[in-house]
Every structure is written in C-alpha cells, then in structure tokens.
Image (cartoon, rainbow, N blue to C red; front, side):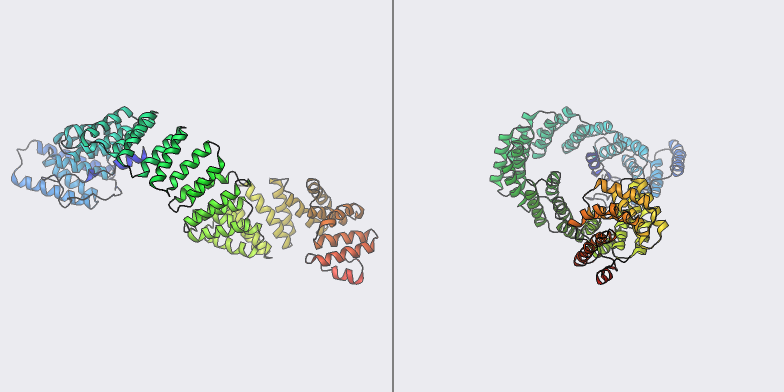
Amino acid sequence: MRSFIGSLLMVGALAGPGWAQGIEPGMEGRTPPEVTPAKLTRKERRELAQRVEIEAKKVAARPPLSPKERELSEALYTDGVKYVILEDYPKALERLLKAYTLMPDNAAVNYKLAEANLLSGNLRDATGYAEAAVKLDAKNPYYYLLLAQTQASQKQYEAATATYASLVQQVPNSGSYLFQLADLYLAQNKLPEALATLDKAQQQFGSLDEIAFKKQQIYLRQNNLPLALKEGETLIAANPSEPRFVLAQAEMYAANNRLSDAIRVAEQALHLDPGNPQARLILADVYRQQNQPAEVEKQLRLAFDSPALDVDQEVRILVGYLKQLPDPKIAPLAHDLAIATIRNHPREAKAYNVAADVQLQTGHKKEARNTYLKALQFDKSKFQTWQQVVLLDAELSQTDSLLVHSDRALELFPNQAPLWFYNGVGRLLNKQPQQAVQALEHGRRLAAGNLEQQSQFDAQLGDAYQELKEYAKSDAAYDAALTADPNNYGVLNNYSYYLSLRGEKLDKAKEMAGRTVAKFPDNDTYLDTYAWVLYKQKDYAGARPSLEKAAKTSKDASILEHYGDVLWQLGDHAGAVAAWQRARKAGAGASPLLDRKLKDQKLYE
C-alpha cells in the first residue's frame, strides 16, 4: 500500500479554507509545499494544552464575543496561518490555540489547528481537531480530506475510508473523490467495494479510461479473466489509435496462455505502430512458450533495434541470458543484444556494464575490461565495476593499469579491502615489495572477520616479505594462509620453493611440494618446485624425473636451467650443457650464473 498512501498524503488537504471565504489569505490556487515536520516536545505540547484549558474555562463563563474580541480572534487566526506557512509550528499553535479559546466552535480554527498539529507530528490532536471541523461544517471537502490524511498517517485506513465515504455522501459535487475512495478500498483489498465505487463514478462521469483500467485491474485480482478482457476491449474501442491498450490486452492473453490471441493482438499493435519494441517483446515471450527459438531471436533483435526500448528492460533480458553463458548457442545473440544496448543508450553506464558482463562470460577479458572502463566514464560510483576492472587488470598481467585503476578506485572507496588487495598485488608485481606490504597489511585489517579474504592477504604477504628478506614474517604469513585453507596449492608451492632457495625446513618443503605435485602432476612450475626441494636435499636421482617431465614442454628458462643442474650432478655433463643452452634461448628467468655455466661448461651454485 506504500504508493497509494503516499498519494493520499499529497492530496490538497493542507490548502483548505480561510477564515470567512473558505480560502486562506494568499493561498488561492496554491498547493502547499512538502515540509519536514518540526515536532513539538512533550513539554511544549503539555504547556500549550494547559494554557488552552485555563483560557477555555474563562471563555465558558463569558457572554458572546464583543466586536473587539472577535477582531482579536481573527487577528490571532491570521497570525497563526502565517506561521504555518513559515513552518514555525510552535508559534502557529500558540496563536491558533488563543484563537480557539475565543472561538472553539469555529470550523476554520479547528481545521487550521488540525493542520498545524499534523505538520508538527502531533497526529492524535490533529485527528481530534479535524473531526471537530467536520462536525462544525459537514459541507466543506477540505475538512474531510485533512481528517482522512491524519487517519492514514496513523495507518487507520478503515477510518480514512469511512471519511472519504462521508465526503462523497455529504458534500455536493464531490464525485471526483470517488476515485480516491476506490483506491482506498483497493489498498485494503476490498475489491467488491472498490468495484461498486467505480460503478458510481461511471454513472456520474460516463465511460472513462481511468475507470475501465481500474476495473480491469480488479477483475485480474479476482481471477476473472473474461471481465478483465472485456474492459480491455472497451479501452481499445475507446482509443482505436492508442497501441498501449492493445499491448496490455496482448500481455493479458500471453500471461494466461491464450497464445494465439496474444500473437493476434500484438500484431494488431504493430499495425498501429510498426516499430513498437514492446509488441516485439510480447511476441518473443509467446514464441518462447511455444518453443520456437528462431522466432524468439528474430523478435528480440527487432525489439533491440529500437532506440525506444527502455534500457532497464534490455538489461533484464541480457541478465537472463548471462545465466546461460558461456553456452555457445546463446553467446552470439547475447553479444549482439549487448552491442545494441550500448548503441541505443550510449551514455548509460548500465548498458556498458551488462555488455562487459556478457564479454567476460564469453571469455573476452580484455574487451570486457575496456567496456567496464567505458561504464566508469558515465558512473564512477559503482564499486563492483571498479572491482571487475582491477581483477581483469591482474588476470591480464597489465601491472601498470592495475596500479593506476586501483589507485583511482581507492580514492573513491578507501575502506574496501579487495581494492587494497589488488593494489598490493600490483605493487608486488611492479617490484615494490615495501609498498606492497603497506597496502596488503592495511587491507588485511579492513578484512577483519572475513577469514577467506584474510587468507588471500596472507598469501600475498608471504611473497612480499620474502622479497624483503623478512623470512620470519614471510613464514608466519604463509602458515596463517594455510591454517585458513590447508589446500591452497599456490601457497604450498611458493612456500616450499622459497624454503628450498633458503635451504631451510626442507622436510616441510618436501611435504608441501609433494602434496601439490600429487594434485597437479602435469604442472611444470609445481614439478620444478618439488624437484628443486629434492635437489637441495641432494636427492638428484629423485629430482630428475620431475624436471625431465617438465622440461619436455616447458619454455621457462629457470626450469630448463634447473634440469641442467640436476643432469650435471648426475654426471651427464653434455646433457646439462644442452639444457643450459635451451635455458638461454628461452630468455628471461634464468639465474645470473647461467652465462658462466655455459662459458666454462661447468656447474656454479
């Protein structure tokens, strides 16, 4: 009921009558602006009420007002009205209550007191004064409207309904309020009463589109499809050149499995408006129910060809297809619809975001990253978009972009731990281990309570502290990561490899590297790590099979150099030199000793 009650509170109740003529001074034809009520304190309301009570007792014993007293009461009323307009409700109530002590039976004074109390948040007193105003002048519609507003503000919807019913019954020429009364009945799901009220409105005003439409909605809620369709035909007959009523009829047919009728009426709408995208979407939905994928695709493409199609509708449709990706049968259509969405709405960030989602789901990571960046040109406020950008920068190994984009994102979202993570990763990849540690440690603190995120930070901190040669901190970070996730194979590999380079805890390194190779027996990097741990333990024969397997396919200079070292230790010097030569051809990654090994054809460690 939120939308209805909101409209009820906006009715013209606060633009009610004045002192004598029925209109407030200076308020002719005006609708008061929305205000934020300034509530009186309990003490202020209690003091005002006590003063009114005292003054009322004095007035009760008085004879009728003298001309001077009447003039004073009018002045007080006018002053009170002025302060209501100025939104100074304490002063307004003070003046109006003084006027009330002189004229408690004046309907306008009661009305204005009700309004001032309503605006200051005192709903109970507002209701009481509004009821008094209605009793004193049962022919003034403003009094009923204000009373209904105070009742609705307190969720007294039945009372508000009764007030509207009294209004249309007691006040001449008030038939226009039948529509608000029908809305109140609808808000309370009193469908027969709403229909009866709309019938009365139809008797007064004849056949109106608004009446037919409301009755149609009621019939649908009553599951009375024939009558709902009948009202739809009435709307179409009254508006033969208006496609929206034809489309509504087609949607009703489609929603109720009257598919052939839905097609017939949707094509009728296209006859009126050949480029109407809504008609195409209805047809696509019907053909989907009939399992005709080719027709579905045809209608969707035609709908998305129209710039009139709402971007939110396009996004909803594409989100439905995203759930089916990367299905190759769906991907071409999803891609084309995404491009059409951008073409139709070139300044809408959401159009670029959904298109990037499609590109990402179909494996086009670089294109997706660039499209997300385009979305950020039109809306920088979406954290999720920034997160996707830096994630893709990392996956694409574009370190410079990763640093630039994570820095920009952190200016907007400094408390988001994932952004600090990717910033730290970028610093580490850019050979800035000290800055990497600062970013990662800060992000880890922000991730407090999220064990999974903290484990990811620990894994990177292990690498960063290793680069800084702070080995105790590195080992502690790796151990923390493995405590949270014992099967983090990236950590198991890095931890064991760095231990082997340092020649420390080699038994632990062998156990960790062995678990990794058992899980990934064809991974060159993991095979190299395991073999190098064995090499450090002087188990050259044990290291050879793993490196031999890795060297068959690897183009990594470090792996090939390690293979040569093992062969040398096993006495195969010619094989060692051949492996070292392959390492040199492979390029970067070999140790600084490789050139000496080749020059002297001798192992150096």
